[in-house]
Image (tube, rainbow, N blue to C red; front, side):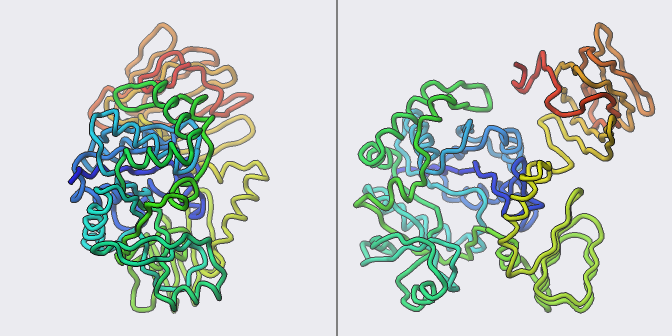
Length: 470
């Protein structure tokens, strides 16, 4: 049997779990269930059946988070491919298949979203092994989740006759149903939730794509052949990738191919598509409360709370409370899907809370915007040991740096300064500068910016170890 090569799709930037999940820090990078982030949990789940390190397809804006979190669970991806723009799952999988074949092996690609929960790893592994038998002989396998409720938020798969051990033909894919139709699907026993997970030969997927979506395949081939490579990333050619139609694998291939089959999966799966879904898969107390962080509850039932500061809840039922540094969301569990309307209003009002958290992670560390006014901004900056910010300059602001702990090596124009705890320096407007941490402990400092414009786009980079200089 061919080896199994995981393909982890990490390109999403959904905000259904706002305010915790945001465009710049989506849910796959969050530890929502357990100590691992969802990306890390996805790799650890698939590792026992994998023959090699995964191919990961990610949004280029999330590249450093993806790489660092995978390093955190001791895996270096076979390839970390960066999408310049989102083109849905069919092109992303095509890129992964082309990359796998370019490495010289026609593996079985086990395609997994990076933001799903599977509670029973053993059942998942057993289903993968059953699917591998069908995929090895050229079938395109999808995994159908055994439904536990008449869900209206999922697409469904109607199963046909059995075609092997644990494998059934796909009769048809159906769209998200209304409540009455979902009840009928559940009662029939012939319908399964569409999981968005797949297993097939790399070559078979590309054969089907060549027949069904030749323009998509051609654009993906061009995007990969013109990609730039560095030690950590494969950066797809933006112009070529933009020419690809944007479509899901379901619409582009699975609904049209004659070789689609399905393996039922009953493993405690959830796509964690809402705070209500996260409550469902979380550990609960005797009253049905699922709380993460510093939470005091009195006489509450079936509530969900997540935050870092103290959250006090009194006499609540079916309520969700989520707290972050810059936003609080309170809603009824039956209405939390409507958080998308909140995000839409935030975007319409031109506010930043839809895109980023107050604390922003960078490859060198992080910064937290702790205060701001008309012509000033205060940030708490953390620089990892041995890390360095870019050599840069600002047109509209000056900066004051005060070291709180650690050691800072500061380039300021033509001079270099070494600052210890409680020492400070001043960076005038227009002066080229760089901040480095030469020590073995994290560097913590306070930055006070002052000037006529304080936006992050007022940075001119001259040199950068992370490839961000223009």
